[in-house]
Image (cartoon, rainbow, N blue to C red; front, side, top):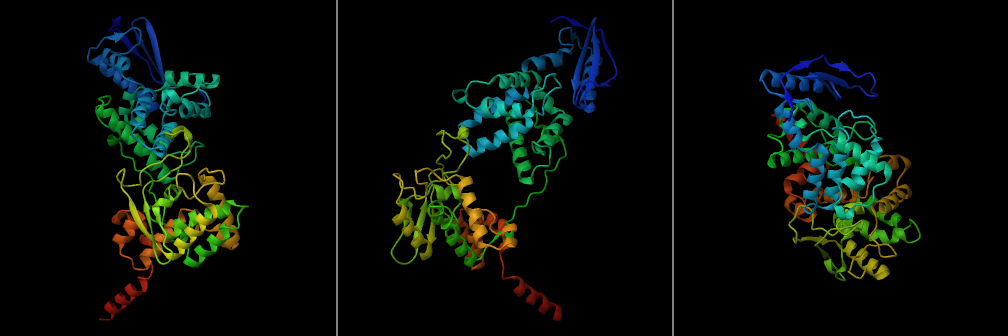
Length: 454
């Protein structure tokens, strides 16, 4: 390493040639002038401050990179954020479900293009996201041939990505937080989306600390609060039993056979509070359907939907264990006679798949979320008034599950039993459905009135 102690610094200046605001730091090591561009003035000032402090400590500066010895060594040995993101995804792939892989990637699509230097020739953001989504974050055996525009985008990211160590700077970690707070179109992201992306970033930083790539999690050094998310079910989404029956009748009328094939699936969401992925994985052998009286569903597996690039099977649905439970754990749900009758009729009319699955298309494929959501929208249109269609009332198929749990709680079923049937913890159940528990206001008002009269 050729070094020099002859170092001179110039003032930071605004980069007038850049499309977006950026700032150029300039300094001289021996006879060689150096410069580096940053997206914010604060980042530029921090960088120059580090250079000045190294010079005061008497460090030699490398003539090639223009950096003091300590910074040059860190730059040579540390990964970029892009490189670390790739290794992070690779290490997590085997241990996570398809939907989790999709969530992690979605967060990184915001982070990786934001944590870059102002290198000339930046590709369009959509090309950058495409190369990350379709190539960089997939296992090697799943990667296809890069298209020419994606080769350019990949090369630019490799050259422009900030060193992972730069995230230790508060200004840089704030850039990351600002990136996850926005949608790709620049509008503010939904609160739950921001929280999920921050959770991914937090876990990445913890992994970097564990691997000794960072000395501490930089998120702990900044004061930043994610937007407040609504954690409780909106009672305006909850339908009555009469409305549920009307909607299920309307589902049968949608399409030539599609609605009829989905009716029992929606009935399971309402009468048994199944999640959509649990209904997708329901088999005949999971159902005890007596001729009279209550039956029993014993859930074993779920089939959540994700983009096929993230699933183990390469299909849109992977089989997984039940949510919030051990791998081979089951959940028993007693079902009322009305659901027993619906399931028996469904099996008589449509039979089952070879593996016993109850709900599938006429060609044996699982229903996609877009398909059953479209049927549900049409059923709402056939059932509700224009005002109700425009309201949040049962706006999504998942709201059938909310209606079921709300009904059980309001019927006086003990929360422990409701939690067991719904697959929730009791604390989560009461927090999520707190606004949907009716029938207590009049009683409480009477108690308050009585107290005021004394």
